[in-house]
Length: 356
Ligand SMILES: *Cc1c(COP(=O)(O)O)cnc(C)c1O
Image 1 (cartoon, protein in one colour):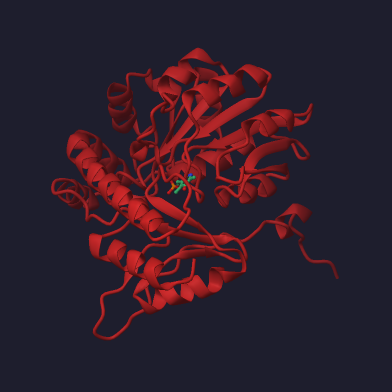
Image 2 (cartoon, protein in one colour):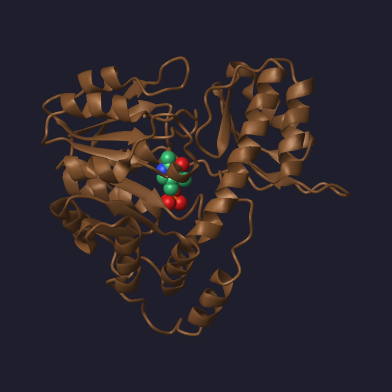
């Protein structure tokens, strides 16, 4: 008797390790710093808009997400047909690989980087080509350009890089794009773009306008605080955006997600003030860590990376005892999100007592 068998690559898909919820400790508030979520509750107005929309749950969402496309086009000054919305930017990354890779085609990305990349690539039957990040956690863009072969269809550039933290500069990205053949799609994953405070930040929109092979992926999950609603968008030249829309899950982005995203874009100034406060906390944390002798990489997202090697599990345990849950990567290091000031204080307390 034979049973139905999935394609062989399915067994090779690495698991996605989600950030753990905080451990409940009697008499102590615990904080989740393991998923790079926004610690602020939704803005007033966003919740009300969503509450209104909840009454339509018996109806399918607007499949064309037309109001959201219009709002994104206006906000970022791009044509609506250069956009594709999806169930989070993870959804977009799956769609990109699905639309551009045949089995055996290669996708180049930095490593360690976002853990969804090898999952999306393997699920499509494509091949991951991992290029180690530099010792300071930055992308090695020269090595990534050199890793492009005849089989390469996509290169993923994660900036700021999750989990190590540094951002690519515009000069670095320009030099990289000059080396990559024009038939190779370059995806700039800008999940944390709102948090970047570099002296030479990437201007993603200006860059995609200059290159027919560049696509930006962005999300409402991080700076906008809508992680629970699963909505992200790509900005790309019209043919690429059309390919993304063609492979998208019909009705994937729910009505409440569309409404929440539009309401958030309408309150973008208020949201960006919150981002500013998180950036100030990030500066306080990074400065505090360095004063305590921790050599952490440049942090341009809403998280800090600790390279700990074999001590990673001990660090995660010590953090847990202080009521903060971090995201350990076994044998490599731990990523800690910037959270509430009290949570950040506990991280600094941990940095004081845990051996460097
Ligand atoms: C969080 C994150 C995403 C976005 O995830 P969503 O699916 O939009 O929630 C994409 N890329 C990176 C690097 C991330 O860290």
